[in-house]
View 1 (cartoon, rainbow, N blue to C red):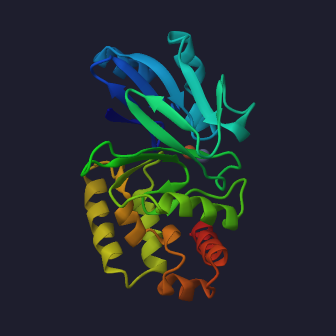
View 2: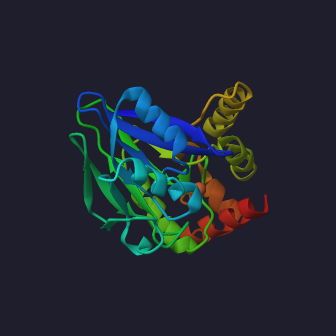
Length: 257
Ligand code: ZN
Ligand code: FE
């Protein structure tokens, strides 16, 4: 399975999964259709699936137009998003699986950013291979999504599910927010050497306009404050130890940053 990252709008990423042998493709969160259609022409592939993570317009804005071009494709999304995702056909819940090109993705129900948000996880097919996690606006590189429709407790529960995945999992999040996320992260976790190093690397990458997505889950576990509610340094900053309170306090600080 090949994964193509397409930057769209001001800071969104759309991901096209393809199988070069079968000439079929799937797209994750098509904010817009045109660049996806251009790429499909380039690789001469037929679009058979849209995998939506949640209903926000910068994730589903291209659905309609893609269906016009490929009327037989299937639109997947979370069960709780019924009525909010254009042309949704499959309503997924925790532990469902979806197939694409000899690969099977597990679905995680991860409410918090929205009440219906889901993630798609393709485990590695052989030892040493990366897993692929499409987590929309839940985990970002160095950060996490805002809580528009969920509570800190829900988001902790959701992120904990994703945090359980192997370190060697690529995190395909939907926005290039990494530099700003890490600017905030160093203010709440200033002694974290891994974080300091990552911040420097990301500064250099962004100076050269290099994408920082995907990141690796192992690196997120070491450096992303929103996966580190059980770390003493962050508990001290939050003046709490209970996970939802630590997370909620740090999220609140980021909202003001
Ligand atoms: Zn969103
Ligand atoms: Fe978004």
